[in-house]
Amino acid sequence: MALTITGLSKTYPNGVRALKNISLAIGNNMFGLLGPNGAGKSTLMRTIATLQEPDSGTIVLDGIDVLKDKNAVRQTLGYLPQEFGVYPKISAVDLLSHLAVMKGITNAGERKESVEALLHQTNLWDFRKKALSTYSGGMKQRFGIAQALLGRPRLIIVDEPTAGLDPAERNRFLNLLSSIGSDITVILSTHIVEDVRELCPRMAIIAAGELLLEGSPHDALELLQGKMWSKIVVNDDELRALELQLRVISSHLISGQHEIRVHADASPGDGFRPVDAGLEDVYFLNLSKPAAQQPVH
Image 1 (spheres, rainbow, N blue to C red):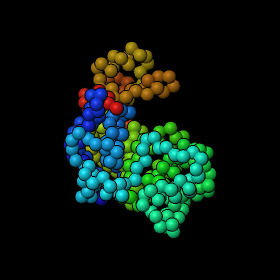
Image 2: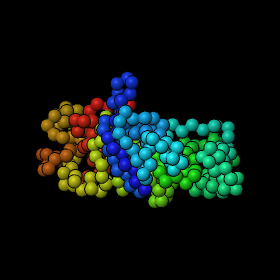
Image 3: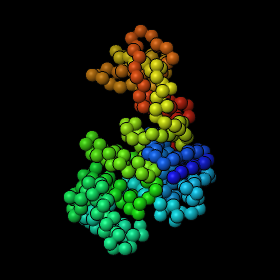
Image 4: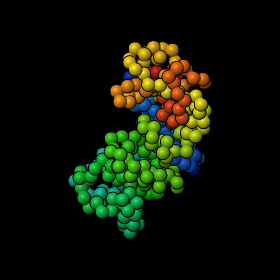
């Protein structure tokens, strides 16, 4: 399966340029789309999911023109939006069966088999008769994946799926995504770097509607090896001075003190120690580029 996005642009009526000539090639794997809130990720996901029109550009899914043949795309697409609404008083099994009918699974036996298989796959079988209002955040997200898998789609889009989940629920959800990502293409749109690091062999970073990086996390990390340095900063004045002198790409509080991470070919000076590069370094380094300075929604 191949998804090819070429020259995609979108400007909203209020003048916000949400996408600026985005081009991406996504193959049959788990693909991570990283970017801060307001980067344009949701705009891109909604456009691929046929929920809104771009101003220009093309999207082709396995030979299907996504922008011209929306019905054909919807038959092979599963979508879990950032805000996934459910009917709170309906049980999971009843709502999933209803959604299966809407997805075109009209044969009762086939529908029952599909719904039961998905409830088992998402580990919701024991809770299938409970109202969705009683579900935890993680359970609701797993139900969201169950409905996205109805009809055996070849492409699934999940938008910010782990935001707000506690660590245990997040791990369960990521394990579920990993199990389905080996068979179909999954686009994971998120601002959480760890999600992409754990799941995705390919990734892209966008900010302010522009593509900053596309490739494999492994290759991006290799380019930074030997070029990342860390130092504990004793006060805010020293932090500000170093930010003026060096390429400080991030800082973290450790026991009340700032640890800064600097990108440099050689040691930046006294007190700095070499550190292994992480995907978060790749992320912040790309966001520090001038193109990423103006956020969009």
